[in-house]
Length: 141
Image (cartoon, rainbow, N blue to C red; front, side):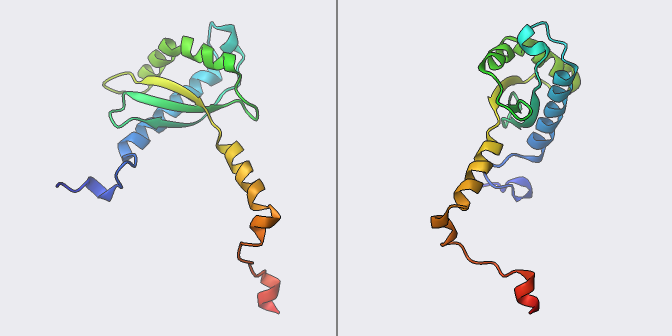
């Protein structure tokens, strides 16, 4: 059995996937910043592309988006699906690939998840099971 180059764990994205996904993220961010959409749902949309993940063959890209501190309305996701051909063409012009990738959009729930984890970690029943950290004052005195 051949060893994977650079000991990349199985299932982890390759350097190429990461690099191309980041280029696609930048391209999408520039498109959303310009805002040249005919669709009224997207014309004034404030959309941030927080992450893009590429499939191993680079033919599919999943863009995680947020609405600058608020949820992206469902109507904008519908509008993004309608504008998919336009967005795909714009990405193809910006990022040199053999094939223009199919774009998929998902809400970025990472901040919500992090806030929920923080809330859970501060609960008394969890706090009592966590090790107590010594402060600098305790160590100095």
